[in-house]
Every structure is written in structure tokens, then in C-alpha cells.
Amino acid sequence: MPQDMPPAGGYAQIQYKRNIPARGFKPYYYLIGMHAIMAYGFYKYFHGVREQRELAREKMWSRLYLAPLLQAEEDRDQVRRYYADQAREKELLGTESKVYNSNRFIRPTFVYTPSNITQ
Image 1 (spheres, rainbow, N blue to C red):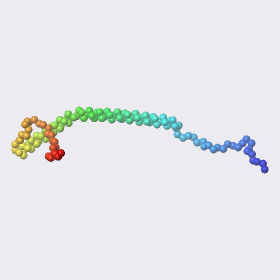
Image 2 (image 1 turned 180 degrees about the horizontal axis):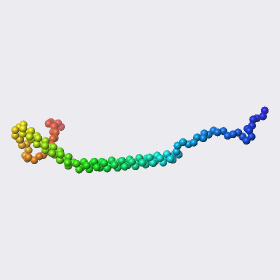
Image 3 (image 1 turned 180 degrees about the vertical axis):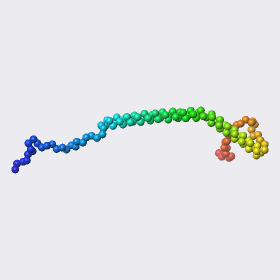
Image 4 (image 1 turned 120 degrees about the vertical axis):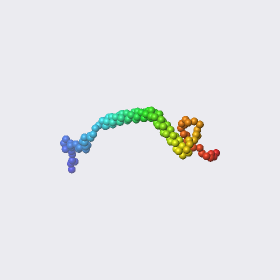
């Protein structure tokens, strides 16, 4: 029995590869885009840090400039309370008692001292 032989000129090629076109951009385009986005992000970040630093400096200087005004307000409030206490004392006792040796206003200091110290 004779053996089957291929036809003259051979068989047609078998298509085993898929011919699918590549989707999307080439990888280096993605890398370039990623680096561009990162560069823009760092640019905005550093400008934001610089702005925060400037706002902190402005806040510090505004507090330095406002400190004397706030101290004067506190002093006025202390003097008002002092004279209100004097008027209340005069109303309750009938006379103004001298506790200190001078009439000059001195900021009151409140210090807690324990009555019994154990060592």
C-alpha cells in the first residue's frame, strides 16, 4: 500500500499566532506621562510648603506685634478688678483698710503654699 505524501508544493501554513493589534500607548509614553505628573505634583507641593511657611512666619510676627496690646488690655482688666475690689471692700467694711505700704498698683500674685509640708 503506497504511503500518502504531501501535495506538490506542500501544505498551506497553519495560522497559530494571533494577530491582535497592541492596545494603548507604548510603555515609555506611560513613563514620560508618570514623570510629568510627578514633577507637577512636586512643584505644587513645594509651593504649598513655601506658602505654609510664609503664613506661619506672618502669624508669628502678628502675635509679636499684638503682644503689647494684649498685655495692656490685661493690665486694664487687672486695674478695673482691683478698684472694684476696693469699692466692694469699702462698701462691706465701711473703711478702706491699708494692706500694703504704698498706693501703687501691683499685679496680684496667687501662689499655692501647702499648709503642712511632709519630708
